Length: 310
Image (cartoon, helix red, strand yellow):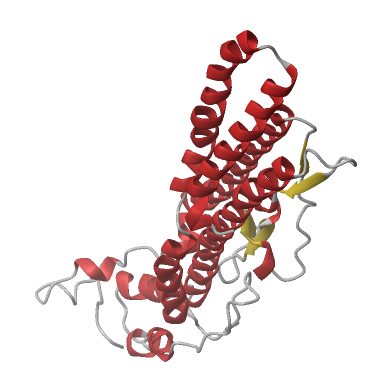
C-alpha cells in the first residue's frame, strides 16, 4: 500500500466492513433487526472509518523539511572554525570544511594591539579573543536545530508508514475473519522510535570559570551516533467479526495519534531547551556589540575609542 492512497484505503475498509457486517447481520438476525441495525453499520463503515483516517491524510510531507535542513547545513559550513569540522550530532551530517574567512578576525588583533583607546582594548578582549568559541558555539547550536528538524522529518515519515500499516492490516483482518484459526496483525508504532534524546555540551568561552552548559535536544534516531531508540509500542488488529476488527482498528488509530502527540511534545521540549540556553547564556552565542561600532571619522581617536598608537 501507499500513503498517497490512504483515503482510498479507508474507502476500501468501509466497503469491505459493510459487506462483511451486513452478511453477519443477515446470517444471524431477523429481517426486522437487520433493518434496525443496518443504518448503524452504514454510519460506522462510511462515516466513522473515513473520519478516523482523514486527519492523517493531511500530515506534513517529510520532504518539505529538506530545504530548511539544507539551509542549516550551509550555515554550518559558514560557521565551521576548524576546531572540529564534524557535525557533533548527525552521523549522516558529514564533515565541513573550515571557513578561512573566520580566521581573519583573530588576525585583526595585531592591527589594534598598539592602540591605547579603551574601545580598542575592549574590542580585542571582548570580541576578538572569544570569537572562535562564540563561532564554535553557534556551530553547535545550528547542529542542534538541524537535528530537531531531522527528528521532525523522521517522525512524520514514520507516522505515514504507521497509519498505512494500520489500514493494510485492517483489510487483512477483514479478509480473514472466516478462517478457522484466529489471526492477528501487529502494528508497530515506529514514530515513537524515530527520534532519540541527545545531550549536547556547550563549552565555556575561552578561560571563563563559568561551567559549560548542556542542552537536552533530539535527533533522528537513525542518524545519531550510538543512539538507542526506545522499543516502539505495538497493538494487534484482529477480530472474529466486523465490529471487533473495527474496534481494534480504532484503538490502533487512537494510539497512532497519541504517539505522534507525545513525540511532538518531546521535540518541542528539546527546542524550548535550546531557546532557554540562548536566553540564559546569550554571551555564549552572540558576541557583544563592539564600542568601536559607534565611532565616527571625527571621534575615532578619542580615548574612549581607538586612542593613539604607541
